[in-house]
Length: 117
Length: 114
Image 1 (cartoon, rainbow over the protein chains, first blue to last red):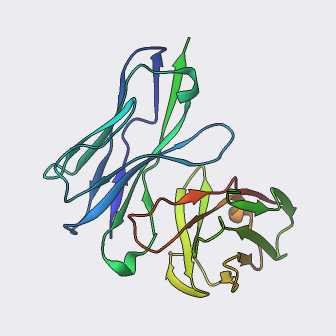
Image 2: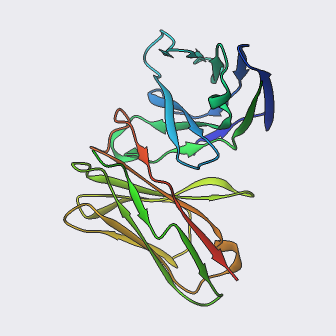
């Protein structure tokens, strides 16, 4: 079984600054996908970024980037130039890469991020 | 393309009743997954349907069931409702079953059990 842990229940950051959200996971699988999802107060969950475990290069999407440390089973999300619209719950999620896993995601407990003006 | 839609958005039921929630995936998406979100347990996987067949099931009692129709629309049913079933129920759709495809989430159905 896989577990995903987010050790920071709440964080805050000033607008335009940088913030890093932490995520660790536990799995015996060698190939898997890791995700960061954002859930704004409107509740619609949105994919922020995805990382394939077989890729050594860290994924980036505009102001969002990850620090993926496979050996340490760590997957942190860095948000640069924070904007008010980044205020949301952020969930780290995992799914194994074998076919039967399908789209079954295991989520962490979430980090509530508040961006302050 | 229209996004994932879920109906109803809000629902109030009493203990012992049953409820059916509906999810319409994005056109062309064949996989639909369901998740339960509560403050205490967080986000938990319920089940996944693909081509009208349940492919995976989470650790939930048999009171939770679902199905998928030929047009990929999915329903989940909860029988004999308990107070602890109060939650936000999210569905997500994607084109295929592999994790390489993005899952798109609906707005959720907020179920309150009194």
